[in-house]
Image (cartoon, rainbow, N blue to C red; front, side):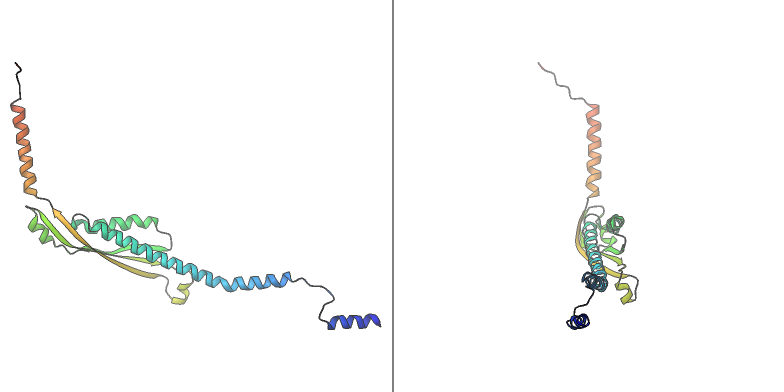
Length: 191
């Protein structure tokens, strides 16, 4: 009878007869906590992708507007398109960057009026770009497949149109001077 009472007293004390390892319980807690943290990790990755896309869009738009404002305002759209198309192959795959609008406030009539004599032309160049991002988790909650973010930058533009008359006169003078020098050689006689 002693053995039965000893087992009963041992069970009442809260200790099992078969000793159990606490490693199994720790592993279960770890797996449950990792599963619970996975959505937050994916959400953090989505936020990082969105912030990176916005930063890329702003940087490319500012660079395209800055380079479009330098030089002839008639070529502003071409310059902006070159900058955006040069950046697109280097974009990560979840981003899609495109040029929405580019333009100059300088009228063609102002340039036409200054064409024969040249002069200074002032205006503004504005560039609008758009980036589309496809987040992993947020697209489920927002119900959209892509987030679109626009960026618009405006830079002042000053261009000095060259004087075409002076160039044509100086070119004609240069040609005549070359012709004269070929006809009369300069010969100096020494005593």
